[in-house]
Amino acid sequence: MSDSQKTAKVSFDDKELELPMYAPTAGPEVIDIRKLYSEGGVFTYDPGFASTAACDSTITFIDGDKGQLLHRGYPIDQLASKSHFLEVCYLLLYGELPTAEQLEDFEHRVTNHTMLHEQMQNFFRGFRRDAHPMAVMVGVVGAMSAFYHDSTDISDPWQREVASIRLIAKMPTIAAWAYKYSVGQPFIYPRNDLDYASNFLRMCFAVPAEDYNVDPVLARAMDRIFTLHADHEQNASTSTVRLASSSGANPFACIAAGIACLWGPAHGGANQACLEMLREIGTPDQIPEYIARAKDKNDPFRLMGFGHRVYKNFDPRAKVMKQSADEVLDLLGIEDNPTLQTAKELERVALEDDYFVEKKLYPNVDFYSGIILDAMGFPTSMFTPIFAVARTVGWISQWKEQISDPQLRIGRPRQLYQGKTLRDYVDVENR
Ligand code: CMC
Image 1 (cartoon, rainbow, N blue to C red):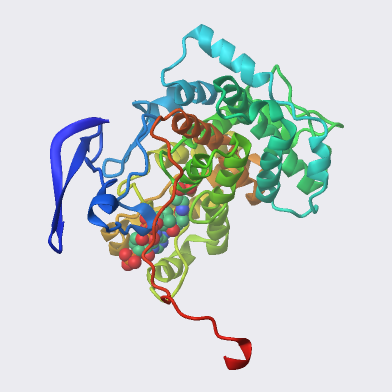
Image 2: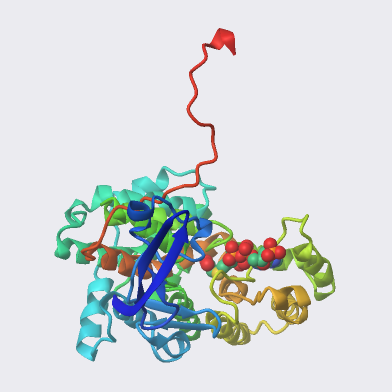
């Protein structure tokens, strides 16, 4: 953290406090309010953390006005077009792009950890057949701490490393098995001769009676979806992982907490909600009705896949995703996909509408991803699990960064209490 040489003055009542400020390498300067309570006796109030930096980090940077997303300084569009998911994982985890040798070693380590403990199958089978795959993932990932005791000691850097690789490697198997269980098909084991994305597709779509030949274009599209979702700095699920980890909880428990948070429709659950919305709209002529509903303050309906806390410009991931959607549908020979037509028209109408223009609401990453996943054959319930597979590396990288931060303290927000003040208990007969 570098001192910006500036200070911020806060005055109230008869007090005046001078607070240090820090200069980031990119983004807004930061006022250090840590002594505000001990020296001023007041808290700050920021529900939703719109103005609060909860940590310092070197992993990912977003410039919401420019619509820029950088991982360790590299723009997401370059990574999506020139790199691939496991290389991006290495970059996020270790800070630099790997040499050819480092990449080979990393890919080998991930590939050799993709199998699950055989007993974990019993755990899957304990769920109701119609359980949402996200419910299964929260449970199974949390249960990993019961199966992999030898990588739960967070004070040991080696165990932290083993847990990181295990999570990145096993997550596709867990998501694929959650899917297989929900459709009543046998679990398909991972294969070490396939790359990360191809392996995942095969575990989802092969059956013992017939193998699944992975189309390289679909594998590339899957890999790009993973890359585009890999990390997104201090979003809700990542902050959840950091908060869970601040108490010293083991990595599997922390990632399970992140998955639970991701599930919500305002966050990772938006990809499922978005495709369901596009199908409900059905045809472009219905769009005005839904735009009107999204603008109506008395209607809770929102345009799913639109808007973002940080981006006040195009989400750079959405641009790549839109291009990918065209490529995948083209490959699959789906020329007149009505959902894609509706999505494109909805985007056009919304971007010209004063409400969306004034509030700077643009399509986000979830707007086009569902169309690709649907074309690949995934049911909507698998969209958020796929997001979770991809985001695991981001959660893990942020978790590792936090664990090794000497300033780590348990996360413990304060509150603006608005409840009753001290009062005496009243016996039931006198109430
Ligand atoms: N449709 C209609 N109005 C919207 C939308 C939308 N999708 N998003 C925001 N607004 C309005 C909102 O009603 C509010 O209006 P007003 O100022 O008049 O009260 C204003 O825009 C600001 O919205 P906010 O809810 O205060 O903004 P936020 O930063 O708290 O929420 C968001 C961000 C992503 C939760 C929100 O835009 C949203 O609910 N979008 C739809 C869900 C979605 O697509 N989520 C995926 C986000 S990207 C992937 C991820 O993070 O996982």
